[in-house]
Length: 237
Length: 248
Image 1 (tube, rainbow over the protein chains, first blue to last red):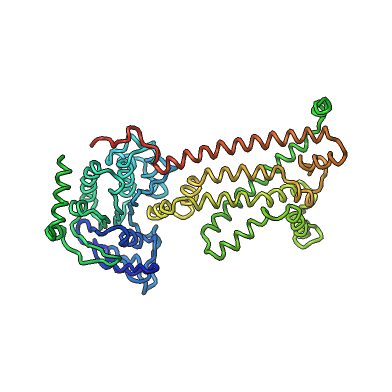
Image 2 (image 1 turned 90 degrees about the vertical axis):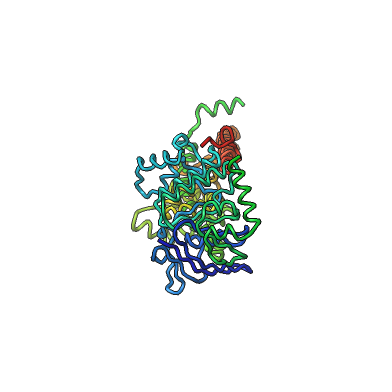
């Protein structure tokens, strides 16, 4: 149960040079916007093609530049939550959830997911009519419904206001603990990362740093602690 | 005015039926061909795209008579393709109702193609990527995601295509001729009666075409009004009821 990534990609002056592998628990990529976090996820999902390197998921090769292997996104079975959730605007919440369940989706299974993510009451609404939190739950239900072999989360909380954010961080933690597959979580917020991740890798201008356990990462610097306590305070208030 | 009313009573309405039939058939052809070409062009590389787009847009910028003449060269029974069609399938394209449809379809095609292309290009790339990661096949993505999201643009393209096909004159005159009851469309009828100095008939048919055109434009406005409301919702500008997340 691991995702191993070693890729390089050039785009103009920007060079993405990533090397990491996920262990048990959630793996977080932390860095400011524009450092290549999203690009990394897009390479893993098969939306973008790296120039060179290798991506392995549970021993299955998703991409290998030397062996000229590059699976289509459809064959990778990687669940991707987009920053703005990318829900289909023409489909209802239920149809969105069923979209990832193959050609003949089981309606009862879809209903169970709707129930589990507490979006049954909005099942027949389109994404344009639901709130940010409901959108995120729909996206998460859709992602779990496709039974992915790995999960990629691109800033899943950035579109939410802070009060709601921490509630959904908690829900996300619960869901992911139950659904144990390699998970890469991308964020620029140390608070979110400390709360969710087991392992943290800091990125700097396209380059991955060393992967450290979240506990060590938390202790490392003073400002981090302060931000984390801010978050604790926010949560209890 | 009296003449006009009198003409209405005894008018042969066949040009109206021929025009509507031709317009409908041409729109169906241009619709599927336009969607198909738009999809191919959207997916193509920059060079293929530029060249193919230029070629597919030609009928829009060329004088209709030029399009008509080229079609005549292609389908004349004395030419390879035309004679092949006649010998093997007994299909005569020139001077038949089929010629009306061909001419109207070719001339109106770019309107369908360009509108469909613009609408497809505006579909958020992330939606397509999301559909791919969800395991949806490319065909399914096209019919279940791209077409529905691009639907308003495709609809207005279809309406414009129909309007253009309905009034086609230049290419139709060259390819189909003006045979009463068979290829005489409203626009050809008008040209003919004006030549004969029969202004009452011309006035009647002008009125008919003006009414149809007006209805079409109004329909188009209603459709595009719907579109802006839709995109607004798509961008999430419209807050959900209460605007606040439901409780835990």
